[in-house]
Every structure is written in C-alpha cells, then in structure tokens.
Image 1 (tube, rainbow, N blue to C red):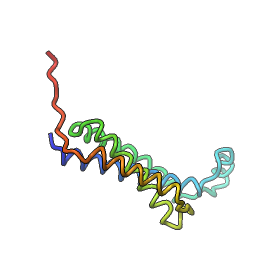
Image 2 (spheres, rainbow, N blue to C red):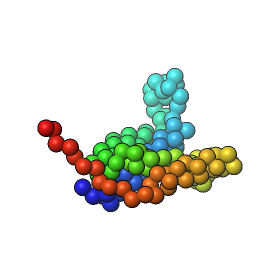
Image 3 (spheres, rainbow, N blue to C red):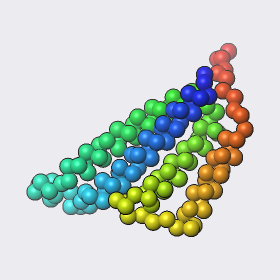
Image 4 (tube, rainbow, N blue to C red):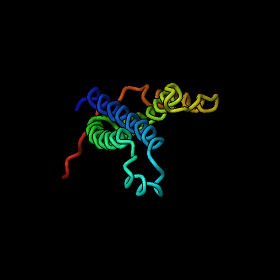
Length: 137
C-alpha cells in the first residue's frame, strides 16, 4: 500500500468529479427543460454538443468512482474523505473565473471555501500511516 498512490487516486477523483460537475452545469444551461424535452427532440433542435458533454460528464463520474475506490485502498478514510472537499473549492473558483458559467465571486462564498480548504489542510497536516488490513481470524 502506498500513501502517495492513494493521494494521487484521490486527487484524480476530485479532478474528474469537478470536471463532471462543470460539464453538467454547462450542458444544462443549453438543454431544454424536462417538460420541453420531447417536443425539442421531435423537431430536432437539441444541442448535440451539450448532450455529448452530459454523456462525457457521466463517464467522468463513473471513472471518478473507480479512482475513489482505488484511493480508499491506500488512504485512511478520514484523510481521503476530507480531500473530496477540494472539489467544492475547485468548482467554485472555476465557475466564478470562467465567463461561460456566468457565476460570480463573493466575500461570503470565498470565505466559506477558504474555511473548507483550511479544514482539509488541518486534517491532512499530520503524517498518515497506510491502513493495515485485518485478517479474518
């Protein structure tokens, strides 16, 4: 078991999940409301790129789950789970920074994200030991 490998898988899961969330947000602003979906499909005016991004985001979520499972083999759960919070900060910063999301920065949101990151740093500041597997005896 390798803590470095577990950390790499956990951060990979965070990146994939964040990308999926941003992709879903972008797509949902370009697709019709559910009650309009059938009529939009019948007249062929669905944004194909948005549908493709939704499908890619679903795939990213699936791959993210597999990388998360791999991370749990090598990291203590408390440490691994705290790393998922990085996704909140990453999505917030990217959504507010990139004009295509039309989101804004605010003092309260930024302070909240800073507290989340401070919590992640606090939880992960002590050296961790790889979890030991217990034998079923």
